[in-house]
Image (tube, rainbow, N blue to C red):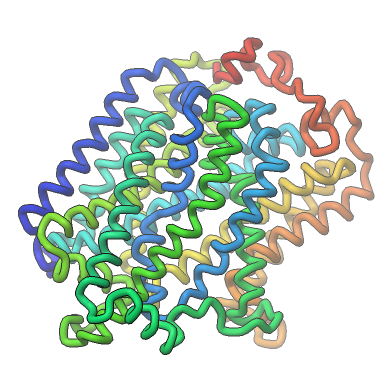
Length: 531
């Protein structure tokens, strides 16, 4: 067993009630599922507010709930800058991507790449998404194990097993509809958890919120930037801003978990509203949890004797929850930590199961199965992903890090694989073709490897990439797009008929889901059911 503080009875009841509620929602939604259309896209009939809150909850993982307070406790608010670019990316998504994807009626986002550039592109993008998604689930579950270990006294592995099983069960049972409705509940809980923490600290510090803000300003704890110098090699405003814009646009245009929600909404207006919900709603919530870390710093600045020695920045918030919040209220905040983690894990699990079923299993292993067969496969894959997630989480617990947030940014940049650049190449450049795109991807992978190996000191200093690790994603995407666009001029451009419904310029030619092309249903009311 671990060396945690121990779970108080009132806290245990609050957390237990939350876990039971999530399992009940998974069981309830699972009873309504009759095929893959329900499991993957909620029968394309979910209300916009639910889809929007689900997108919001997915963006607010335990990285937000624990690593953001840890980052602002240790430093300032600079890690928030990439998130401030989200409204720009949401505007781009609403203008270009949301309705476009709804017209294609794809189930997997990466079917687009297969239609545009061929099977290799679909497999490449699906594989990179799946790898990053598995890593993301693992790191979120590992972050969740930190407060739970402190709170319960369990070992990291015991926490990973218990929480991993709960989230896997309700996701396997209920599919995307379970994900979305549990996310709605989880959004409310995690927001309440953050507000409760701020209120509790403000009430305990003489002078309240004005004293917190004044002390933080005097010590530069609310600074967003180190420098406004234009440099991609250091932690400057522009480095974070460019990284944030490119990363967020890539997510809105190619991330399966977001595109599934575009498709799950009952109308175009609902899908657009849901996109604005996450685009505008994330910033105040991310800021709230940055402020939680600032409040904690001010609190322990006033009462240093209350802070246990040797705590990592990511462990300060869990320590405060269990030692300073009243019994029961602490359980509510821990339930919010659970909610933040589960809302991201379940989305990634269902999205990855969708991609693996559509882009790999159906395409390469079992092409003519029944819809019931593919539903069983999707559930089995979700179960396997849950097990793999727990293994990754445990392995991550063995890796030392200054803060886990920096590791997340770095690996996220590397594992993005230039997919955003490939999408924009196909979407914006009508002359782009399969061979040119393949050359662009090869060049992008080489650039990503060069940058990554440079940061690992595996490249001679004279030849090393000088860019900050967070902009590796920017470099990869720019290389794929630029090299692919230029290389495509050396080969014949696709015909307008081949581009039908697949680029911004031919988006009005939207009939790309006919039976002879996709093997799906002819009925537009039912979409592209796998069969």
